[in-house]
Length: 250
Image (cartoon, rainbow, N blue to C red; front, side):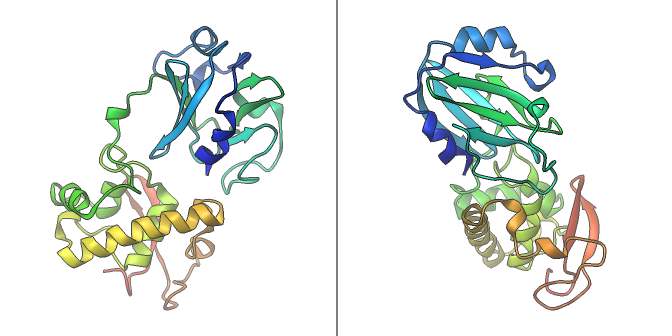
């Protein structure tokens, strides 16, 4: 969704760069380096790997991360108007990065500063993209560790692109417990999980974000499984709050 929005920048020549928050600039990137590298150059491509949006600008690669609260705004329009854990206000103080071109521009608004911007991001730190992951790759990833299944799916170095809400939705749909050892899945369960990952991500992208899942409205302390009405469990798995159904997720 953000990649599609960013494609509007392709062919545009950058005239200015705005990067007022040094904390938001990662891995040694500075405001001066961004201006020196990007201004006067043309955006030639927009692509994505997991949660990382990559813009090819001239000979440089610009990496943009959004976290839970970052939104992209291109030429005044945003593909997502509101995020679950973000402020509803539109405040210029929340603008962490921007670049402009003749007649338009791209802005990252991020109230909680959970995203980041960097030049030449190290893509090798990321595992294969979740939408491109095949069953053989998933079998290999899961079979190499006895860690909790959800913790492995959230590990961006193993699989790129699965966040907390997506993970709970995927596992709920697949009927798999998030606390189960990753290496205990059967061949059938791996195949089912692989299919659910792709279908769930595609569905949520079409609906408008990871907060649009069928489980989402019940992700609270009094929540019940939308499938069978069982009281949901609330656990910490992989450092993230996790809701799941102990009845059908095994």
